[in-house]
Image (tube, rainbow, N blue to C red):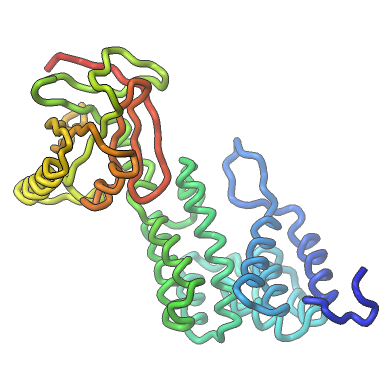
Length: 349
């Protein structure tokens, strides 16, 4: 039981009341989802936002505002601002207004995404640190969820009002505001790292599928193709004693460079591998429909998968391949994604 005089308590009954009121206010609301998915109550996001505020050093007013930050946007009714002020005080209302998308005091639903974005950014550029902390907690919760969903292959951007690139730019602009107003503090660095991760080409489902569907052509002395197959299906004799990795320095981070530049990059990679005593076989990845082709190398004798990924990162690659007797695997270099397929060997042209 807490002390009768209330000493040593880290928050007051206002926070308890805010939890209950927020829960009632958003009881029927769910996070973005597809029709085939089970609903996730919005309260899961609101609790995370409030928790992040506590952890980042915010006080009770900020933590309550974190619980209520969506109230003016998603649970608006005439008189809601007065209710917030009466229940939790003018400072909480001020914080909620400062972090709300759209014009405080109105039902914000009619605002377009573009209008709301511009107004929100302008408001944060003038906001105090407490308001910035509440806004940061909401946005880092959003970005974390996006990154985790994209890493799991969930096509989340299909649920957004805005195109993928515009959404990425908006989260980046928010990061610039946080850094300029709050400084290079750990909270801002965490946010910026997540935004960078969210923009990774490998989290674009179209790019990921390109890697997964590629055919791999081995040169001398093998002269055959490795073709992706249904997961768990293997057809052919695996010719190595240990797992092999397919590496390249071609077109770093899914860019498009001239063949002459890519050739020099691959030459540097080949020389590095040979200097380290690594076995190298020419290997090209290509689209079976002829849309693209990238030259690279199949290597064996690496110390570990970590070494292969380090080589990929060093040469700016979004992903590498691991070929084993069981699977052909795409491994993301700057993240944790991977996907397995079966494989078959073709000796045809």
